[in-house]
Length: 301
Image (tube, rainbow, N blue to C red):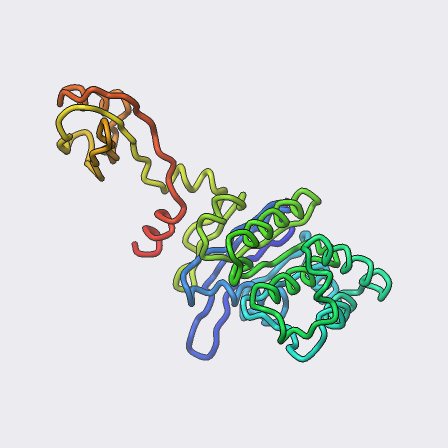
């Protein structure tokens, strides 16, 4: 079941078309990656879902019906351009933003203090935002995005500004929120995070939808599945009928090669060709297609 369904969304700004007939379904309880190069239309689609912008054509459905302003209260949105008021105290601002999402003062105070303790930032409550580093301010804004337990979390580049330790903290919290039933729309250029977190993705390029589906299916259908070979013997030579040689490096006691099989060449054919060249094969395995490589190949095609 889809929590959000974007149906044939088109958005124009004067003569520029930011989105051109884009349809995506965001499954309930899943982490959905919204990918694309800068200027592809991702942020425009996010703003349409949030009703910050209104599409020229198409419809956004929330739980199967047209989305309303009341539904927006069930959305937590962390924009790429952070929006904390620098002169306000952290605690006052967090309380204000939580109450904007419908929480009572007592409920907001109790939940925020739990989150501040969890993130190790309880001592920041009375600091001004301008006293915080970028990463610290990011933590505060993440908390204010999730504190009202939204049905849909929209996170636009949530790892920006974080060191590796804190980026992993945010990844763990995203997974925990999913386990608690939240649906998460994640927009990021970090393909490692996509591989770690996302169940489904959509790729937008030049205002149009390129692909949409499960990460596993897209890896299977679009990835360049290669073979890794550890061997001893003379360096391998490419065999145009069976495989191309992507790389072949000397290691301490053997060689390590990466092969791209020719269309229709199965593992048996590749192994036969390797043995015919006199390779003493120590290990042979299929490598998983990387989302970063798939992203680049589809955007550049």
